[in-house]
Image 1 (cartoon, rainbow, N blue to C red):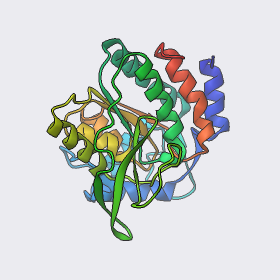
Image 2: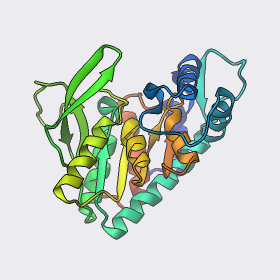
Image 3: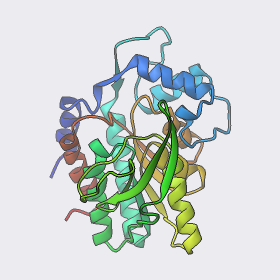
Image 4: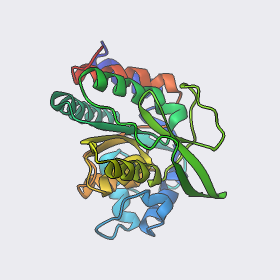
Length: 271
């Protein structure tokens, strides 16, 4: 079992928190796009108020620990490990609550190459606790606008975790899918659930557009987010997202395993 101190040390050593690989330039670009209400940065959240760059910097400093100094424009970004730990504790509480209620849950990721194992372990544990892990709309088409133009993807599930694949990609149950920030996959899934008469998820777990898209539609949503993902933190500030864990979302996939064990242990879901 991982202690809080051991996990804190791991967060820093693996650069999940502390000095991370995400650059200040990347984060500032995302904040400017969000302030301009660019859909690439909103990823499904429709802000209730105007968020200028200064407001976003203050929010991200409070939520993640990044510098709120506009004069800091380059170098690696920083995430306070205490904020990551606090987020993981809140995340575990929501998992435990869903397990107690045997609530139907939906898991989805736009970072399958890195985070599929993390979410897959959560899906396994929640299923073992009696939760229905929803897997609707398998194979349905999703058209997503990317920097390369309009691209068509298909919805798929691996270990109960939704993701999108390029057409023709062969699913073996272990291959990963495409990286995306879009909220269109979760909207497609939720629409399919509504059309077939439910059950609707009582908790959506994931990242990027999976969290923002679900939260915007009124579903309880929790997830992980990097310093260049302001939409999730704005969603939390405005009451659309329940929990956001600040961390680097693109390190080696095995570096997330201690987080999995820590969260499941705190949620009393260890298998």
